[in-house]
Length: 337
Ligand code: EPU
Image (tube, rainbow, N blue to C red):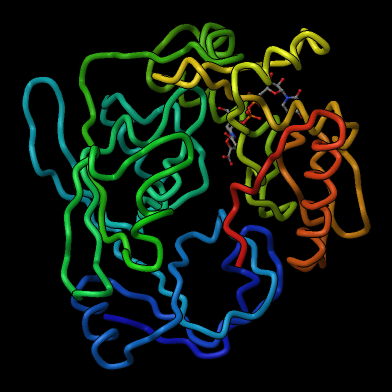
């Protein structure tokens, strides 16, 4: 079953809450819906709109927005160690996390409360608190708009990296993700190494799945603005990955600067863009209807009535001030349309 809307206001379909319109929006339930639509309409300009949590519209969209709606979950394998699940793209990511915690299944609890649909999770390999979606994803199924066939990629074939996957590169403009397969485990495997997580978990009585989820929800909600109250798309920028020599030079001047190792790559280091923006003096900065969040400098917010252009003007200012102070380039994590 598909549903087609014309000239639709996107305000309630993007977490920044900006007003823009799309010429067409199509809600689809299945690969058959997509095949029918692509055969009949042969759209040349289209884009997948999941939950709208990682997108900034700077203008009206004159193409077709495609929104996968199916939320089906299917058990595809089960053994004493765990289960493999297939979950359709339209499922809300955090409903899946809540379900897994309720079932006593480990693997995605650190990714609690990330605003995302299941289909969006592999695109930027969502990550938080020392975990990434790629750690649990075993395969991704997509509709290929060139051949109109369904293709299944294994985890390795998805080329996952920090906020990266094949869906942002070779398959950009080609693939519409239909479903994700995940492996979840019965044996506890707490991952408490990041920041305040261990302290918050201990304060709740130890490393149970429920305590970890509660701790992470509490940490996130203390720093990240609720999009229903203050429009935003989470981290607006990626944490930059720089040459180790650049990090060393900066550490000589700023010994308290946070740095993170890049797994498998000793010649590069990841910096914290939030720290750089904060130290550039921009945390809490406001320019009319837009601003830098006052509790987490990585997040740009819509104080009400802002346009995508307003947000982009602020984003350019943030990048240029970070460049001027640290000679480091930061770039958006959010998809700008
Ligand atoms: N920091 C500051 N000032 C700030 C923000 C951060 O000094 O305003 C410092 C913190 O004190 C810390 C470091 O920068 O030493 C890193 O901050 P934090 O742990 O809050 O994480 P982040 O690097 O700012 C990343 C993800 C978040 C994720 C958190 C927790 C990216 C782009 N962002 O943020 O993801 O929740 O780690 O794991 O990688 C998202 O992608 O939308 C998102 C929220």
